[in-house]
Length: 211
Image 1 (cartoon, rainbow, N blue to C red):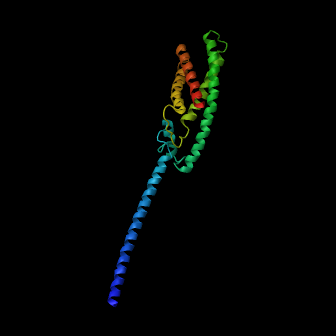
Image 2: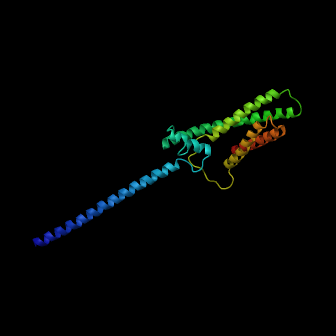
Image 3: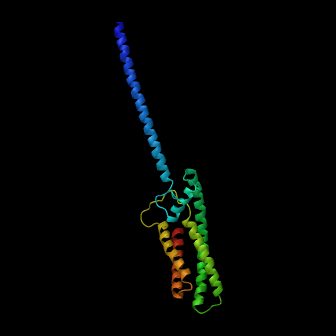
């Protein structure tokens, strides 16, 4: 009877030991899976902190290997990205305000330019000064947009969105503004054509983005 009890005890103890080993093994595997999952989530979170598509100026400054990351002025963390998004909102708000000021300057410059082409040179110096101020405000506004921190994600929309149209028109009026300044003393006819192209595409860019 005692031998049977002893045999049963050993049998129970062996079963318990096997069960204990299985539990330890399962726990270790679960821990490893958990750590792997955490590592994957960390990598995914790091990637999601930046959009996949960025303007080259944004990537140069704010990309994962951008200047702001390498110098540690703005490390790629959730807390820092929150600060960057606040900076982005302020820069784009200033970009919009400067945009309307620039548009007003373009209109005034166009009116004076038309008088010059008619032979009335009384406002030549004013036209030139206003042109310089308009160019400064334009390229300042462009810089605020190009060098602003990128958004958290890029929203995908079907068809042509107002944001996409704004970007396409920006390419046109940026090129036209460079040509306008370059041709000011080179070719008056091309200068005028470039100026009207810059004004038309710039006004359209503001309208599509505003409405």
